[in-house]
Length: 234
Image (cartoon, rainbow, N blue to C red; front, side, top):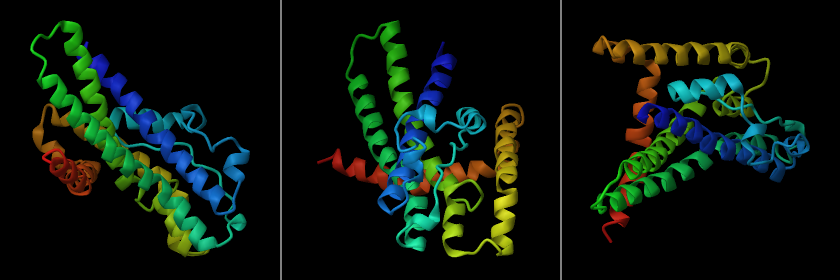
């Protein structure tokens, strides 16, 4: 039962991370003069408008993935570099904010459930569902921040590269052409290492995206944990 709840939680967490992320891209692009995303119905919190099946499944299983890129027309931006840059980072900023509040809710739920003196089986499963949901949402949000800043197409980091380089740039061309292939290889390698590590522990040291996840939760997430630790002591 717990394994079913766990994967249900991961699916919900992906939606909570991806939908606001893509909405933020569309909204900031619109505010900078480009209404392309709004015209295509992407300035929405409806997750069905943003889910890329491959990226969604990979994220639910491995913790890393992508949504359907928001369509933009950079020529509509009032200021090209500013519009591209702000649109690119809008998603990761939104995810960091989500992580901030998800950690607060996780801490609150953990505290409240610790005060319950009589626990039924149903309550136990509910506790597991709620606390795991906020914990996984916190982790996935931070994974999204760091992962999306990798300069690989179709991630946000590549949009930053687009803002400051021309398409004829050889690095730009390489990242655009092979970015998604590199992403899939990294995610599959990470997923395989996690499986093998269950039988051969040293395999975890070869998990490249595992280091990204560690950096996300332990380094990027540290200010959030420290902030709420300080606030809850007041």
